[in-house]
Length: 239
Image (cartoon, rainbow, N blue to C red; front, side, top):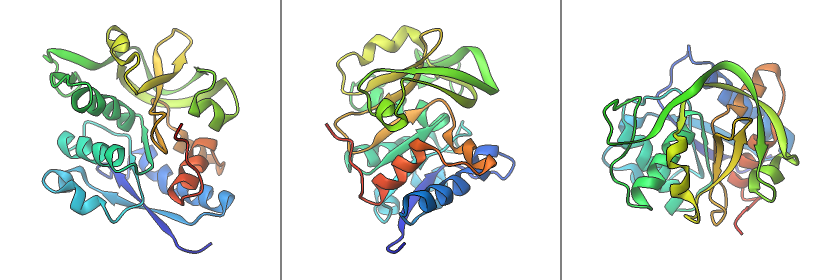
């Protein structure tokens, strides 16, 4: 493997967070299994408050990681916007998934009042809200929309994945994304959103589940393999 590509791991690293320990391992396993050399570098959200493009333009891809609230929500949202507008491969897991939805609602759809009720309990528009049932250290079934990028990546319409989250897209706002360009492409057994994607983007996917946890048992994961391949320029999902 040559020409190592760089992934910005946007989040506030804490060694006690399981996902933060798992993510570098997951990238290493996927690099080995795909033959693409990719490495992650932690980028604290506070570094992205003022000049996010100056920090991120040296990277080939962005992974917005779990463990929100972030030190700087604005920094996290700026990183997501950078990846979306610069058409850099983007993966958002757990908190990164939530903030990808929030960034799109605010920036693209114009819902500037959209907010995360974990950070702002009095939000006028609590787009990200507590789940009906928290999914902390649990596994759950997910059904993908046929023909979606995520279904093609998994080569399946139904999977079981691992979670550690208590917040997600409020069902009351799901219809805002109809025909918006951002597709909700995965749902749990109760019909609540679990995956989002932008089909017109080379690789832009967010999941409520944490695929990186596969690395804790030494296993590779199809979503992370696809993200690594996209980072290396070997995969584009754009319609």
